[in-house]
Image (cartoon, rainbow, N blue to C red; front, side, top):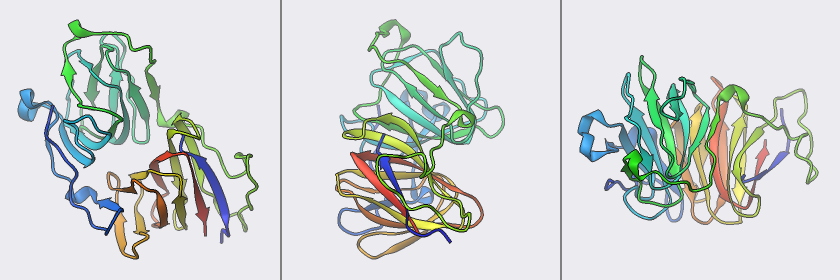
Length: 282
């Protein structure tokens, strides 16, 4: 059994609003099964990817997280966006790059960022399409023609899941951490973007069949399940089971969340935070 393995982590247009909230007070929980969808680009109707918002409102100038579903063989025309977005593949495979680039298919657990103003295309795999999580820090999310392209001085990132760099508790050196016992797998993290003292995001991997406490007192803390199934107990005392990929929980004010990863597969979460957070394995 792993005992007190502490992982300090640097939290490295359309009218859509948040779906059903299950927990009381400041904690929000949205299960994937309760997300409802509308066309991401209303002008294209059912031919467009379908979007379901987890938090925020993709049509307003607010931070927003959403689930996007692409149909089989979907491929967009070249276009730009007015704002930068970040995406993570949950299911299927996605290609996102310059219009003339060779296909680079990114599977589940892959991460990319798309700078505002840069021409690109987005495509989904031929069989089964794809499901992704998309996040913006400001809005609204708009699709514009490439004639309106501009340089916002950001560089795109395409990070296939096979190239994610995972850090164990032994790799994180800025505070002391008790080691796991009996060769039990320890939680791991991977830095994605941001700074320890500001907005940031990481992947957090919780080994199958283990549990721990995710905690932050620094401010905003949001988590989206990317793979595996988790059971969650929130500060208000209620428990939600089977948070499958595409489910979300979080709070504007941080908090302490007890998580258990079910035994079938390791659980991977996308964690957004303001400042540092910890995950204490049990």
